[in-house]
Image 1 (tube, rainbow, N blue to C red):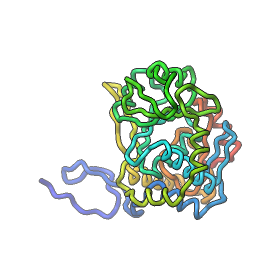
Image 2 (cartoon, rainbow, N blue to C red; image 1 turned 90 degrees about the vertical axis):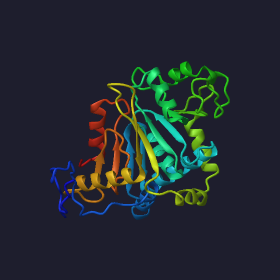
Image 3 (cartoon, one colour; image 1 turned 120 degrees about the horizontal axis):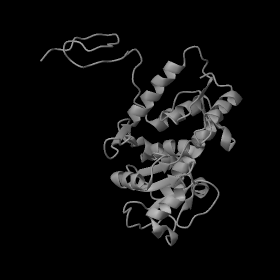
Image 4 (cartoon, rainbow, N blue to C red; image 1 turned 30 degrees about the vertical axis):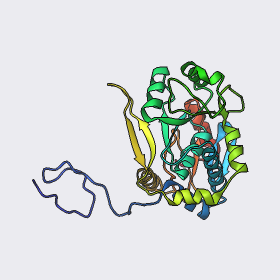
Length: 300
């Protein structure tokens, strides 16, 4: 078998008969978890803007965002979500999505991205494939009425105690958490989960749980498109997410100051350094994202 030559710089094409390509190693990989990376950024830039969701009238500093993450993490713990449990999220771009990604990472749970365009059969397949214990869902996206679709698949919601679902088609699913201010039988409200977490917040408990996590623990499951068969779940670790975010940040940083603003029309999964993240509309309409960029004076 050919021996791989050692090179210190980037290798942009295969060598020595091996299909092996690597980028620059000038910047060392981080072994921080997502939560540690976020808290480090919040400690360094507490009062700088971190998140803007124009359509929801939300503007958070890094401190406010990190505090909100802890509140939701506490609320999820009170629902019985533990390290390794799968928490699905079915939603377009919203602030709740961002909070949930970081809150699950804080306690070692695994966020499962449910494609906003999924229909009934795809939703059922994805939730059962990974065994979601909880699902956080928006009210709807375009013509897809998520809550009604869930009621179709789990008619037991009508009589279920919120947080104690026992559905024949979803044996692992205990809780459905709906976004928005409305109420739906059998479903918890996202604002109520936040309120419960705020009332019983124990930062020391969260820190203890986080200290048991390593960079190589799973944090996220993303499904492939499923073009040629059922979607396949790909698992990402803290190490994947943090370093993807760091290197994207380096790539975007050229010519920008540390307090510059970058818009993301699709939610990313990395902590992303110390620049504000701008969310456009949650309906995928391009002009809403462009308006958000204009109003927030984005540089990227």
